Length: 411
Image 1: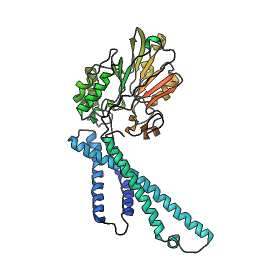
Image 2: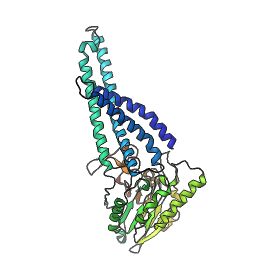
Image 3: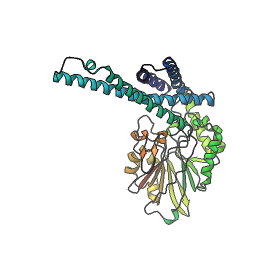
Image 4: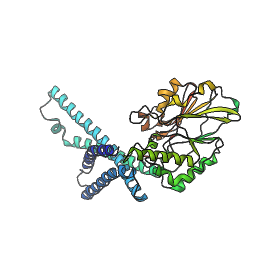
């Protein structure tokens, strides 16, 4: 996995850097522009910093950061890289459009036979240069805005928010009305460094005094050791009906090159042990019958199941549901890490599952989620990526996560 990341970056960087170079070259080509040499020197140093950050990020993020300062430094370089991506995309699109316009002008003039003078000589280079300058400066401006936004997002990482959602279910017994569930998802402990901020987030959870707390997967990024500094903090989370958890795609150790399958399995067992030590009950393709106000309902937990081929299908919903149909309980709640499971299997095959709780997408930690406007790059990968979705009498809620992975922030 690490080798693939490095290969992808090494192929992508030349494309990005070339068009960023073109944008800077066009932008600084104005006659009389002062400090041009210093601008080029600064750009060269910035490019070196970004390239080194992109090489270092997959290495240290999958092992251990040397220090918090290095982590911030490298993640800032990655943020700059994403800004350069937008610069390159706009510059490439603008260059292509400019080339097409020039070709179209040549063809039009040739058809009209106005003269045999090439378009560039007829109109002069000023128009072409002005167009290039406009495209390049626009690309640099937009890329700068994106970079500044991502920089701000890095300061937003620990600003936890509680999202209160009231789910109205048909034919729900009066005894179950008012059942309060707190869902946590995608802690990604390997990316958490500020214990005081994490403790403040956990205190917010405690203050809600939930009847039931559910964690929907991705406790760590790569290995069980990541959760060790936080065992005491997350162990504080309690609820009368219990704290239950499932496994996400990152919890299996699939993204590290282990020396042996035995080592990988031992780390996986350690992760399960840590969850149990916190008082969390891990549901692995199984269910529990819980009671609230003397009324029973089912809590079902499946292992990771996704329609995306790059994620393993460990989940077995049929096994988790064994014996439930005969009980005819008024409420069935499913925990399934990946929301793509809902449309693919849950809704068409298990209409009795009224509420499904998922995570996984993070809303890509980037986007807008308001009642009037909802957008994120995540929506191009997942139909359901944040918030509540309803079809008929079945509901899906997608939690955008407690932690972060990849981009070290939220915007």
